[in-house]
Structures are given as C-alpha cells and as structure tokens.
Image (cartoon, rainbow, N blue to C red; front, side, top):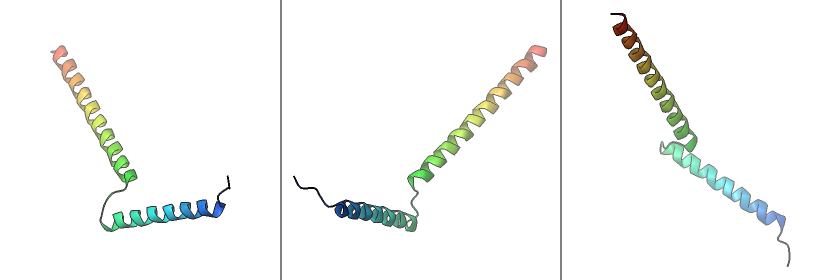
Length: 70
C-alpha cells in the first residue's frame, strides 16, 4: 500500500479550519450565539438560581427561629 502525501492531510485540515471560521463569522453576522456563549449563560443562570434558593432557605430559617422565640 502506498502512503498518502502528508500535504493532502494538511490541506484538508486547513480547509476544515477555514470552513469553521467562515461559519463563525456567518453566525456573528446573523446574531447567533456560539456554543461557548450558550454554556456561559446557562452557568450564570444556574448560579443565580442557586443563590435565590439559598436566600429563600435562609429567610425560611429566620422565620422559623422568629416563631420559636414567640
């Protein structure tokens, strides 16, 4: 079996990289979000939700201790 030329592989990799870059530019033009932005927003939303739950639990604990004092 003959080996393929290394340049063919490099050429293909370069073409794939070019296509990905073009796709990212197109998405920016159309205002679409990248995967990384979506993940960051989801993580921020989870953190906010966790903070809200923690505040609610703290408020409930304070209410319970206030009613026990009376």
